[in-house]
Length: 250
Image (tube, rainbow, N blue to C red):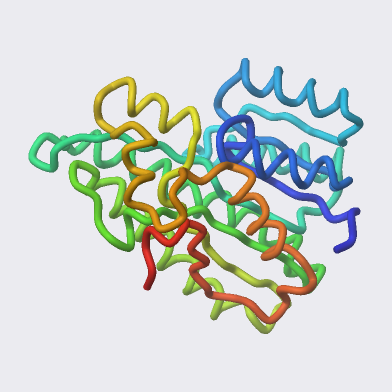
């Protein structure tokens, strides 16, 4: 895959997003690391730049279209046209369904689903102009199998899967592929927060129920993103690529 193709990773300063950012950046791609976390953006972009990576770090709220558009203007100016987007930014929380207020529901949809809509739609002009593009969304196994106390999260991520499939059909003839990866259990700061809050079991407990008996890593997800973004995956679109150790097979 040509290393002059500009990569955008949302939620790119921690967890899965950081794993994806590192992989593409250290292989020579210009990468825009977009995140809401100031300290993580500064720390991780400086570390990657110190390793010779070409990184543009921008604070972005994906639920705010103006924020996304402003970041994309800077990316086009400083790095070039956007060719690859990994829409990873998202939130998760454990709340019983009867306790999900309308504002809590709306926040989950705004970030996890509308944020993906904003991220992808704003990048499309570059891909359509080039007749080449790779879109990869990060959904969740929760949207496939359900998840107790996370109905709002599962609903938003289910929307991401539906959006991915629709866009794959709409833009296949334009040289743009659109696929999604629904991780299951991944060792990330978000998982650590859930464990600390008591809303998520310890990873070693969950690992006992996974055919490949360990939690996934950001590097596992990043490797799948690299494949889906490659020229070798030009005939792969509209697919749900489970990178989950066999925890969900379907």
